Length: 193
Image (cartoon, rainbow, N blue to C red):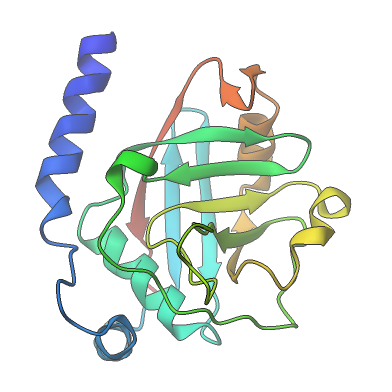
């Protein structure tokens, strides 16, 4: 089983890492153009325990475009929710060894808070004075009361609109030091509107 997981990870890592790099391009300019050409706002997350749908906010266009780009490039295939944030939510995407070569410029919107079902991008704090977002790591809130302190610190760019019970089940799974005892792999596809 461990060999299969490692094999899937390697294929996913190799197949899309190069395609998603921006190299010397300005991320903001690139994402504005990409977002104009790719206006989708809904994605479906497939897991072994069921599916859920995320609606992306058009008011955070850089984060929406970045997420859609990741989905269309196949980045979120055979990824996993690798963190059960204690009593607050789940986190997934590309972990530390799989960072891309850019950050997403911040787009904080006071109307989008860390309510139940909110989807936000994680952030690297070291060497990131602008508090720009990770291009790959995202989290989903299951408990608003525990997450209020995150408002204004991380960009909320979407929300779960169907299947929140699947997110709850993932968050309720057994874990050790915020690591799920049984990894929950996922795949994300764009939903045609």
